[in-house]
Length: 233
Image (tube, rainbow, N blue to C red; front, side, top):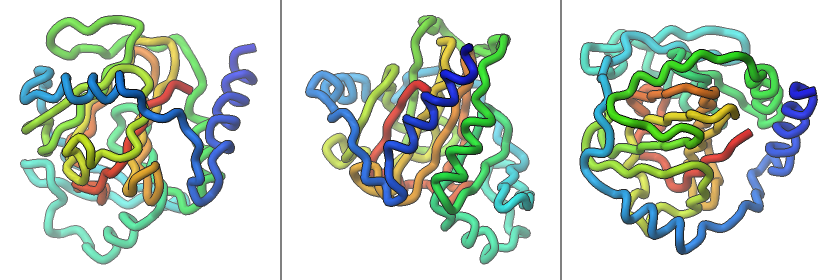
């Protein structure tokens, strides 16, 4: 009985938003704001850093393989014009730690993809992050530099920040880590404009998983986040 309920929940969750992202979401509370400011610090988690060597962009069932240099940036051999055309696609989705990002022009196609890729199973934990992590929680670290470096902040569980300018985090996010120790799928959505508008990069974090995105520049989203939300499916 879990699968039909999960699919219904996902469809209701995303279809409640119109194609132009006219979204009605819970407003961030003063308590959330205080937590955001309190957790802002320079070194919040010790992360084993391995720069990816390749990323795959999938658009209209076609794969685009992009190579990286030893610092985790796209190499100069890539077709820049073709890449920028892909980067302009409205919706980007990554599932788990696979170096694959799926691109969608329409929200309904993204929703269908999500329903097909969030089926609960007996996941084995890959939570090998250094330090202690509380179970039955989700924590998201965001960083101002690539490779999980620079200033950072950590946010717990579900949250909605519609305008990052009030926290001095507007257009500065370059990498992120999420640890999900619950039995639910979790989504972390980075939006190009305030109030969850514009292009979006949505990360789906499976249960009992630590998910890392090393460099937002490789998907055309570096220093472009103006609002962010985290939610359970």
